[in-house]
Amino acid sequence: MNKLNLERLELCEIEMPLRAPFETSFGSVSKRRILIIRVIDRDGAIGYGECTAPEEPFYNHETIDTAWSIISSFVAPLLARNSIEAATDVSDVLAPIKGNRMAVGGVEAAIWDLEAKRGNTSLWQHLDGNREQINCGVSIGLQKTPEILLEKVTHEVQSGYQRIKLKIKPGQDIELVKTIRSNFPDILLSVDANSAYRLDRDINVFEQLDEFGLLMIEQPLAAGDLVDHAKLQKLLKTSLCLDESITSLREAQHALELGSCRIINIKLGRVGGHSEAKAIQGFAAKNGVPIWCGGMLESGIGRAHNIAMSTLPGFTLPGDVSASARYWEEDIIEPPVTVSSEGTINAPKGPGIGYAVNETKIEELTVRKETIRLYLGAASSESG
Ligand code: OSB
Ligand code: MG
Image (cartoon, rainbow, N blue to C red; front, side, top):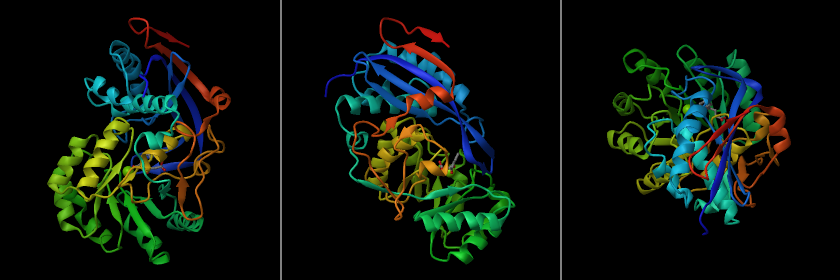
């Protein structure tokens, strides 16, 4: 494939109100601030990425503002100083940056899209995906009452989604799961705690959750607690799944070696982009560990990247990759992502991410922009 010739990087913050607030153990969000990344080459081709860092540092340490700063001050200069010939070069060139995986990952993903477009191939095929249809589940936030939650679950089950995930937190757990399970004895059901529990305090909650035939319990304990997760996994029949804890292949290897989980949630941003996601996917496949694609309430651009990643071998469990219309009145891609009545999404056929980006819509939603040159000596920056 012909070499990349990056010319500039554009950062663009858009504001998108969610159709309904999304509440987790760490807080609630009703209006997303989303960082869209364009990487443009000297032929004028554009690659799109989305930085999944949220508004507040409550999921992990990153926010849209820290990511913006890291990209502008460190990612762009490193890209400008090192010649990037292929998308696979990017994670090595950016490796000196510690942590800040979401900042790195958004840019890395944009370069993969650009490279796929230059090769006139779909991103999912460029990544070596081998599945034309991906399996989809939904993640349902905390609700005011178990009855409202039941209504939401009923709606999503009727829509065809293959797996329902409930958000839980201390005080809102057993009752919720009991209500849903007694109404839907057979569905694939899981819970996600976003690290809200402690092994020393909450063991009896897990013993009760263990009796509901859950597919998995996602990230019950703190992100750094691989050892406590291993202790907890030994006590349970139900598989633990790690989300926040897995920031790299190394963490995934350690988690499996310690027995901290039996399932891994891969999020493109959290692990720093497609190369690291592929490395974890390859490792999981070799070891027979089920993986699935997590979500961060992405706009269509991040969603399209998630779809591409989910076509890789081993993404057998339904992901948190659901229809645009669950989140947005109007998405920024065309067509919007839709899910079949069997709970599947077809991988798009067009080049790159495979969806057209609605630039007019993005322009309308934009609240902040910055352009950074990646070519012609040192990186220079203009704000606007
Ligand atoms: O833990 O998976 C999570 C949303 C924001 C932050 C963290 C998580 C989530 C979700 C929603 O569960 C996934 C989605 O629908 O995009
Ligand atoms: Mg999670």
